[in-house]
Length: 188
Image (cartoon, rainbow, N blue to C red):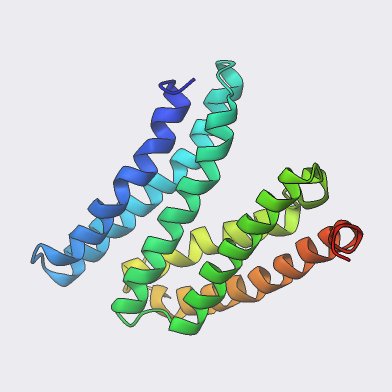
């Protein structure tokens, strides 16, 4: 099912990427561009939850949707991280850790699927926590201001993105450990 409501919502996350990046190149006032980019990221990130909910509720789950959903999430997060590095709001090392892990785990999952061992690298709660922390850190860093007159979003976002990097490494180690028996069995 290529054109279901859930799949179209997933596509919006991919379409959002040039819009999110473009906000920083159209000459808006600094605070306004930060607010627009933050709002866009939050709205498009929320479609991740919504598309999964609707797919189950409307009985419109599909293998294509299951493939596209994590790809859209990774594209959106990676694009936002690259923007944040460009704006000097995130360290390039953090971006390398997060993007590198996504590439490595995606490749690992693909290989595990090819050898019939997908269950050994199924999504774990640790990966979900990592994603949640990223999805809070990124809007804080995009906003780059004071929230409710008390929260320095750049400071909180920096702490959270580093926590996210630590969770990223931890979850990568977890998935590699789960896959290691299969890897040892296949590589001789």
